Image (cartoon, rainbow, N blue to C red):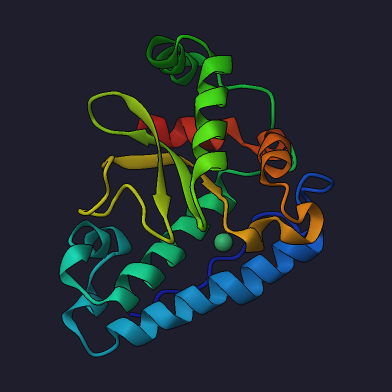
Length: 199
Ligand code: MN
């Protein structure tokens, strides 16, 4: 029961001009594909091959670095594609907006905290909005770690994810990570984020 590289529900050019088509194509067909293939290789013939990705990640500290890095890479990119859209931007509504306002004071404060987490993550990693089961939290993780992992500082279900590896932005933004982060808000699909918050 091998994991499969998911197809995107939009074209590689759908997030232009904020994320360019060439970056999207390489990111999906090379990077995400490699994480997926390497995860399958790492779990092939082991008891992990019968588990869901969530089941694997919640006990990941007990497994190999290959499972941690590629299992995270498989899951993180799948979520990343799902919470973006060419019709994104604007702001959340309803219960999610209320929870964000209650937790962070305002949507603008939340954006600032999230953008800061993304900009200040040293080296490669991710920024997250996490449903901890006891409220929302912003966090960041190194490499391909994520909040589902038992070794994460902030644990819970990630409902918003931002990839800040250089491969996610270097072609268009070079070393200007803050510019990429600012542009990315225009492609966040808040309806998809709200779905995950509601679960
Ligand atoms: Mn990536």
